[in-house]
Length: 450
Ligand SMILES: Cc1cc2nc3c(=O)[nH]c(=O)nc-3n(C[C@H](O)[C@H](O)[C@H](O)COP(=O)(O)OP(=O)(O)OC[C@H]3O[C@@H](n4cnc5c(N)ncnc54)[C@H](O)[C@@H]3O)c2cc1C
Image 1 (tube, rainbow, N blue to C red):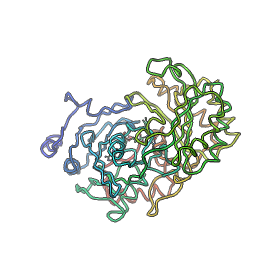
Image 2 (cartoon, rainbow, N blue to C red):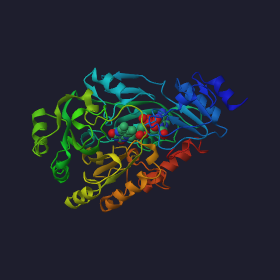
Image 3 (cartoon, rainbow, N blue to C red):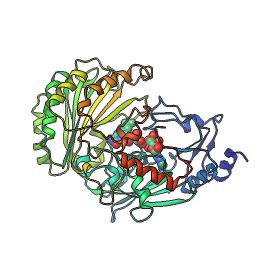
Image 4 (cartoon, rainbow, N blue to C red):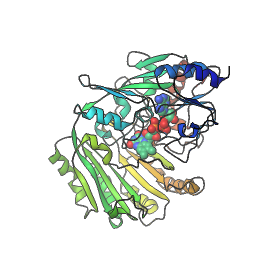
């Protein structure tokens, strides 16, 4: 029996080859610039399907997982691509403050289900990103300084491992695999669900303000100084946006270069307003949308795009910043520079993001003081030739402030040899390799950029 026939006889979900009508839809990624062309696509509908895929592939066909494709930077061109989009569903145990999240769920589903109980998950900026893919990479969101990496809140995973069994990975069962899944990213098995601890939090003081281009030169150094005064209960970021003159951009921002300062404060709204005042004092805003808000609206702080689009990005972590950094940054990326990046963002880290969980976890980047992220203009004709040297020029100018380690969800540019591995401290990556050897001795689950 061929592999595809074997899969069709053992998996309840669709098993598709490249000639099948629905194949392209099944393997489509949120990043539309990446076209996956695996030999076989399998739409998982259950834990049993995941185990059946592993057992069928055991003879040596590589297995990779596609959730939403937000992280699809490199095409998958061989083996089986197991898709999780049918495996949605979130159940909340309000008493224990635990969300049981199936592998295909996006953050929006968890936010809504938890919100009904006055609870909130520690998410990323976008509610559209997949919960599992994001959390496997650690995950830094709008509340990172207060609550740390999202993976710190993972309490257990169900995983179809190379043995063909579905096992639990938690602090008490397979703890080495649990350690690896909290930030070690892909290549350990097919995660079918996760138990995730929620926090009791129904509102925060937060949102974003937008200033016009002439204020960027003063806002950047002021923001850096201001972040040094903030308590751990406050997390902030800024982004310089070069927005096209297109209909879908809100009118006051259309066609402009602006800076948006984002803020999220956990505590009394009046105290949040007091802490944010130095940013308001920077001058007139185009939009001021910082106020007390329900945590269910957390994705409005960053307002990330939700529709699939071609995307290209680069990211890394920065050490402590100073006035020299602000000057250098503005020289290479400020509003007067013609750079092909629609968004250039810096997020403030530290606080809880620096502290590991008591039992330890694999996530890289706890030592970073800030994240740095650039998204290229969404034009695939620029991706291979124009964006890489433009990004390199900016990153090279900022290299005196670059941190040694980064964190995989922010890495981007993973096609450069060695850059995937460099997303973890060397001893962490070596320990991840040991866990891979234990659970996947024949490398059924490749790891790396694809
Ligand atoms: C608009 C946007 C906003 C973002 N915001 C943030 C942010 O605020 N903070 C942050 O930290 N990151 C952020 N990211 C990065 C994001 O966390 C990563 O791209 C993440 O990999 C996306 O996961 P996914 O499941 O949605 O995507 P996918 O591309 O489908 O999955 C990414 C990888 O995760 C692994 N994976 C996914 N599901 C499974 C599974 N069930 N079993 C085993 N492996 C699996 C696979 O290796 C897969 O290649 C953002 C990305 C975008 C595009």
